[in-house]
Image 1 (cartoon, rainbow over the protein chains, first blue to last red):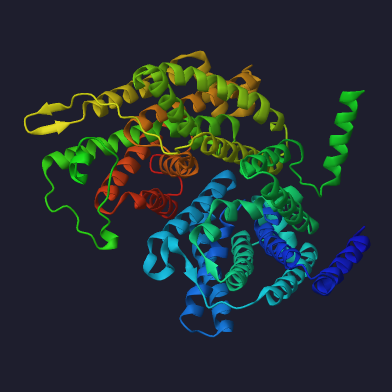
Image 2: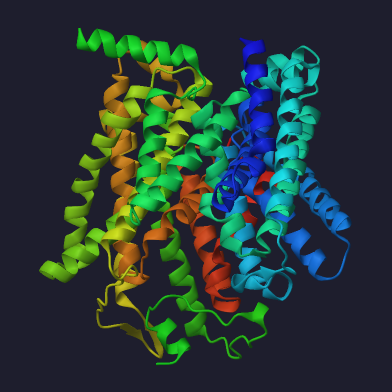
Amino acid sequence: MTIALGLLGLSALGFFTALPYLTASTYLISFFLSVFIAAILAQSYDWVGGHMGYLNLGHASFFGIGAYTFGILLRAGVPIGVSFAAGVLLATAFALLISYPFFRLRGAYFALATFGLVALLELLASNLSGVTGGSEGLTIPTGYRLYDAYYASLVLLTLLVAATAWLARSRLGLALVSIREDEEVAGAFGVNAYAVKCLGLAASAAVAGLAGGLYCWYLTYIIPTTVFGLDAAIGPIVMAMLGGSGTIVGPLLGALVVDVIREVLRLKTPYLALTIYSVMLVLVGLFLPGGLAAPRRWRRLVRSVRTRVA
Amino acid sequence: MDRRTAWLAGYPPCGWGILRGAQPPSEVSVETLLQLLIGGVLQGGIYALGAFGLSIIFGVLRVLNVAHGDYLMLGGMVTYWLYTTWALPPFAALLVVFPLFFVGGLLVERWLIRPIAGMPHQEFLVASILITLGISLAIEDVTAFALTQPIKGIDYFLPPFRAGTVVISSLRLIFLGIIVALTVGIHLFLRRSFMGKALRAVMEDREGAMLVGINIQTTAAVAFGLGTALAATAGVFFITLIPVDPHIGIPLTLKYLAIIVLGGVGNLPGSLAGSVVLGLSESLVSYYAGAEWSLTVAFVILIAILLLRPRGLLGA
């Protein structure tokens, strides 16, 4: 199973590396680029949300901080490498800053409080118009970057998947999972729960900050809604949960499935796309809370349908 | 009508945007302060109804209902519809909205919450957030789609109440009275009636309540129905005072969260105190800094409480 998945992953990597040479369609490339960025966010969210079991609905705040820091600095004439680094550092610093008050909350309270964080940052980004450009947005010097951004995000995603695969086997990964299962027991077995939680959140924030910088660099134009809005906040979480939280394949599968569905919806129905999206959420919550990548759940679902039919 | 008179007449709190460089009002009269006080306490009372509901639902079902603020929005929209179609005044709308949303809450609980009740802890948490978030987004999107003009307000006025030179909106006073009566009613229901005691018992100790023969499913259904109905009732007051648009749901749920954290989980007097604190601070911030900063207030309170008193102000 693991070897098969590894081979599948490698062939997917080969395919996506070769894709720009196989097709001339920039639509396809930009679509997969958005899938990659979504998958990066879903995967980095999942370190905290899936492996550690803290539903961090505020993952978009790190993404947005990365995007805005990068954009503001680049516009001010700072070299691009330094701008990327500053975005990552600021997102990480913000994660460490909020970890002290927020890790006092657990479960659903943590989820809603972090969700509030995104709303707060969106508000700040629109109201502090002197720094962020307000609701009119922030523009950086433009240029044709589709292929560069495609490969950059592909490399980042590959590294991220490798890191997650390593995490699943390492002591740190085990510590994260033990916190999800029972924080008190984990503490009793010598896991420094608070330090591990901070580390997990900081790592997840660093990746999201880098993805934010990449996003801003590719699009050259950001407004508060695109980086802090409801869609940016909910998207990665839905992808991770739909695909299967706490697994390696799950967030990738979720990002692909959700982006394909969203693209089809956008082409077919101009209205009520969000409603169909939310009906999907409810159905996954009701029938497949382990996600699409949870074979045991599928078997149980099939069995229950079969008994109901018979 | 300039902004100050509009505000005093009971219109939405408008701001002066200190942070954008505009000047705050120079004179602060007794009348203004009194208006701010009444406005803040009333806003707190409206929050309290929703926060009670969320607190009861969370206490009994262990579900954090993300869609809670959307029930308020829907309650407001139903009130608007009743008012424009059949000219029903908000007081009569209360009698329609409460039972309607009670039944709605029962149905949501029966079809969407009960099926996941048996899941293991982590799965239950994930599933409950996915489902309530889905409900919230669906309500928001369908409402925004159904309305051509998304912002709805009711121009319902009563002659103002005058004491000497001070003018007070009598509508606000009457609403305040109704909210106080409702709060006392909930309190008596929870203390005196059998069902109320059962709800408190389940909040206190689920297994213990089951052992003494309390029907968990019935209490869960009643808790969900009651919570939904209370939030929607708050919507009746809300839309009469402030225009409502389909997207206020999730920000409101966040405010409820701040209130519950402030007052302690399942602690009704605490929620009431928290709501009044939030309402008053928002009223002052809206007046001096601008209404767009009011969500910040809830958030600053939330962070401050988490840093200083992680168990809430009145919480055990």
